[in-house]
Length: 193
Image 1 (spheres, rainbow, N blue to C red):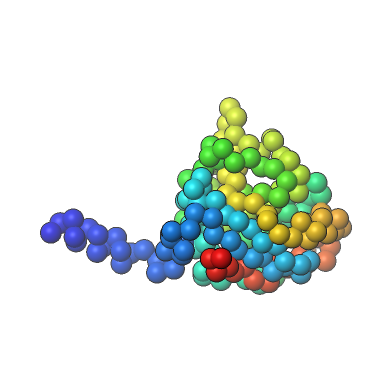
Image 2 (cartoon, one colour):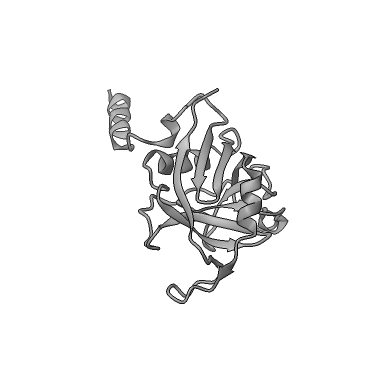
């Protein structure tokens, strides 16, 4: 009886939109990012980064990434988003997650990974797409940045994004902000093929 009560308590405290319930038998769910520069399709890798993929899908299901911006762009390095709406106010963030950077996936051109602070386990909603091979972001003698998927369509869009001009925003005081807002209009889970 105690096990049953524990299960019920756990079940009813989980968000109903939790990522682990989205295509739960699909190890490689696909999502489409509809950006102001064009569409990018990502294949996520739940086999190597289940915590990170399920966390990302939580935000997708909650529509938290819709109508946001890519707030940081460093040419031939990364484009980063998932943290701010179009007015540059922070989106609502969930709990931080365990860093899965030791999963064997590398920060190579076209991969998606979680952004974080100095604390290796501080990732929540923000992610980035690698615009080059970035070995310095992989784990070594220290924690790296957890890669959890890769671009499978839209490399021309990545090239277009990589060429966009950036500036230090006077309003925000941040460097590497796209001069023209780079919008993330919608992120949606694609049906299983």
